[in-house]
Image (cartoon, rainbow, N blue to C red; front, side):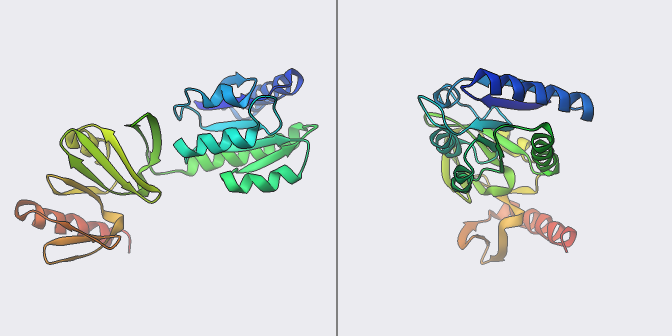
Length: 235
């Protein structure tokens, strides 16, 4: 099931979008879970990376769509945002929040279905697993491919990623199990390393994005074997 949010303060357009979604479901044999909000602050408050696609009106009374999208992007880099607007110039600003596309009012089913199909295709092509992690003051969704390595410090996991470092509660055993089919391998008891991000091994250290991560004596040979197998698969 694809989880879709409609954020639109005009009932006429909100109902039209929902009707178009149901029409698309019937035509393409898709399954949607649809949630409606009447303003940007409604979706932002308590947001927990729970949607795959957000259909976001730009102009709303309390919190406009652009501001809402900026808040959402701080927590969720993966959700697909499609802006609904009656002014084309707003679409250009959408690139700042990595919006996939925009639909201009009045909305035609053809234009809408074309953009929705593009979004769904993008979702289905994602081969990497999205992780929902508990971080301080909330929840974040992170693509496994964006994680360089996971570091364990007591009961805290530190996710070193392309967009920065994030701390969350958890155990190395659990995260290793969650990432076991995503080419991650333990370098020692404190590091779970993304093999795709390893640039080389030198002096018993894995070189990951210019960082040197120590490989334990017990795990070094197994790590080298896993790395060699991975490099062989991606040639």
